[in-house]
Every structure is written in C-alpha cells, then in structure tokens.
Image 1 (tube, rainbow, N blue to C red):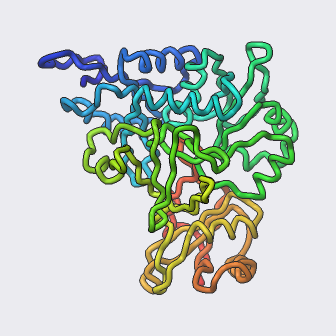
Image 2: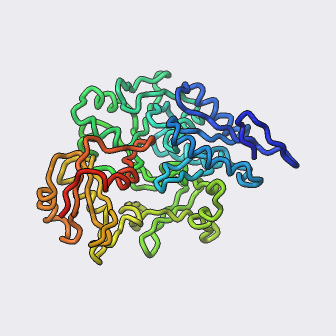
Length: 400
C-alpha cells in the first residue's frame, strides 16, 4: 500500500489501493462527505488526520506502516487513530462492511435515518461515524461548534430526523445555558459516549428534554455498539469469568495497522466468530443488558488492598456534584499506588474524605487532591488522564 504524500513509490505486482491522508482542519461538510464516500466506494483507504500538528505527526509516523506489503487488508476503507492513551496512537483498520453495519444498526435503533450534526473531530471514530451515517443515509451533514454554541436542530429537508453525537464533557458545562439546552432538546436523539456519564448530569439533561442515548463502544467496534445498555442488532456482548467484556458482531475492526502482535492479543476466534476482547470490566444480565463497570486496569493495589478507581471516581463526582473530577492511581513509595483525585471544585482533601467516608471503604479513600481551573482534554473531548498523570508531581496538591 502506498501513502499518497506527493511521492509515488514503485510497487511490484498489482497496484495496491492507495492510502489517502486527510487533514481534517477547515474542511467543509461537502469535502468531508466526498472524502469518506471515496473510501467506502473502494477508491482508497482514508486516514483522517487530527488538526493538532503534534498529534498529527504521531499519526503520520504510525501510518508509515501502511507501506509494508500486505499490512492493510483489501477490505479496509478507513484507518482511524486511537487517542493514544499510552502515548503512541494505534491505527484501527475498519472495513467498509463494518462501517455500513454500524450505520445501519444505528438507523434501526434510533427509528430511521436522518441528518447528522458533527460536533466531534472527524479524525476519531465517533466523528468519522457521524460523517458515514449521514453519507450512507443520503442525508445532510451539518458542521457545528464543538462547544455547541449557536447549535440548532433545524434540518435541510422538511420532516427529516436530526441526530447529534457528543461526549459528556461537551454537555457537562451546559447546566445554566437554557438556550443551548432548549436547542438540543429539538434533536430526535443525542448519542452520548466516550466516557462514563455522571448519573446526576444525565438526569438533569433528560429533565431538560434532551433525548439522550448513552452509548458504549470503541474504535475497534466502529464506534458505539451498545445503546442504553442494549447491544445493537447483530452485536453480542459477553462477560468472561474475570469480568472482561468480549464483543462479537459485524462491526468489529480488521486489526491494528502494522501491529499484528497487538491484533492477536485482542482479536480472537470464539465459536467460529471473530471476537474482540476489550479492556473493560462489566456485567451482562440474562436479558442481554450490558453494564460497564470500568477499565480492567482501573483496579489498583494500594497498601496491599484492591481499589476500584472507577468506583472511587463515581463516588467523588456524586459528592462534589460535578463531572470535572478524575480518580487516578499514581506511583508511591509508601502505598505502592496512591489513590488521588484531580478536580476543578474548590474543596480540601479532608472535606472530600469526610464526604466519601460513608460510601467508600477506608482503604479506598483518596490520599491526594489537586485542584485545576480546567481539566485537560484530548482532541476527541475526553479528559486527558495521561496528561494528568504526567503533571501530578509538578502540581500543587494535598496529601494524606
């Protein structure tokens, strides 16, 4: 496979499908739609680039693996980069069939195809799938501010349904913005995913009339594949003995670009079906309802005892009344791993521990607190946990 960077490499044998790198900054809805249409039609494999130059440089380095013969399967239409929580982005290869399956299942679950507003970066899977859903439905794509300022639910075609996909961070700061909440209430559905959602925030937004659909999924599943706890049509989710969630279905990815070792770790064949072993813990009820409990690596050992960081974070957000709070595990010479909290709320560590003591075991209470004016986010809108971990030692903090 060749990178279309202006220099054509000599190839032997049949000419492979080219990889088209697409800088997404400043593109119109028509330009985005046309670029994705070419990929779904098989003209090239599309690799959307993030607008941030440093992040884009890392993605370009990852995409160099596409030059290796046979690195990209023939059915791949799109290579989306992960957010790089480990510091190095992975290239998730999605086939046209997987993308079409995900889009069709979403249309079916939401009540039919419709126009879509894009408030997320098209270089990540959530934004890319918004473009593809509108394209495959033959409906309009509208570009809106990621801050949702001035958003409206008006459609290009009278009577058309209108959808929006967002992450919790985008909605968490709209508590007092009555005008924006009223506009969002005009959408037929708002897909909300990418991170755990504070139940209090969810209740507040639904009371304001927003038709929210909580989603669970990842780049490797062509975006959200579980809506309001129920897998999309054709998707099967199971919990293994250790609580690890495994997913089967037509929406699964084709592998990681240039990393067959990583692909083999998570993509298996189970009962004759390709199965994705996720990095998440969860429960699946007898009726198939899925409940995600957190990441497998959220469970840390502090002072010789297990602490579930996801449970700590849920409790912290509830007592502080905010989504701008993160529970982390940082290396510590005494505790092995010290459980700490970073938040924008002006509180003290003693006050926080007192408020949490009725709901958390003593060994799970945070032993560190740092307060920031704003929590850093990735370009996909998620809170940047890696940046918080890297900055922990240099930030002002309280320790217990």
